[in-house]
Length: 256
Image 1 (tube, rainbow, N blue to C red):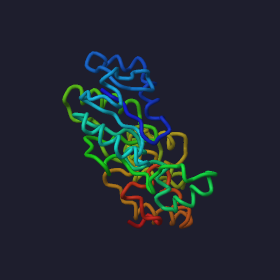
Image 2: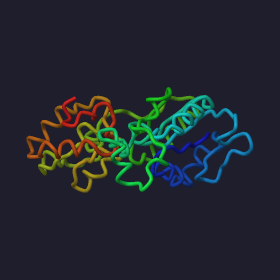
Image 3: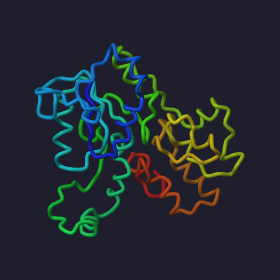
Image 4: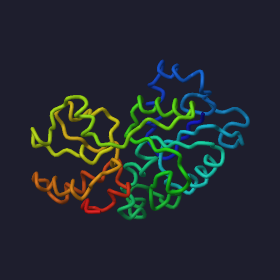
């Protein structure tokens, strides 16, 4: 297995490192051949410039530079299976907010010499550039799901991650619905499960960290938020966070 970093904060890679002893459950089936953050550089033929073929590659981060485009093609060529981990790799991440604005203007404001900055006008998910075998959602990913996906690919099984919403997790946990009982704006009905309904458990609305669920009705979510008194601009802000460039969320008013 290899772990690759693109444009990201490293949070999903740290989730894998945080698994610690839990990794022992799959250690007899998995050799960690390349993972720079864990100190595995792949040796002479296994690193960035090598030619080793990996059974499974985990990719964190979005494609946001010309170099990223070339690197992800290299990773795809050298990977029998490629799994993206996290919001950046699946939908461009928070940095995809640039996709709705003028990158040249940003460069001029932030950098004293923007001519030295090599970047793309957009930040996009990995599947926009190469075929992906599975996308694991989250900002960051959930380590239980991450371990389950690694174990599934090691055993030749389909990943045991369902695409239902956070609402189902609330029901499983016996958590009282914060939207119904507390009149709290919550993105749980349209958000992919995986966090264990962490925010609703503490009587807070879901922020949508795991991106759209498979059957997400974003337009209906926008209508419901407005019904609860959320202003149009705030609806757009609520949808444009961790997964702003997910196809279901690109419309600024959530009316897609």
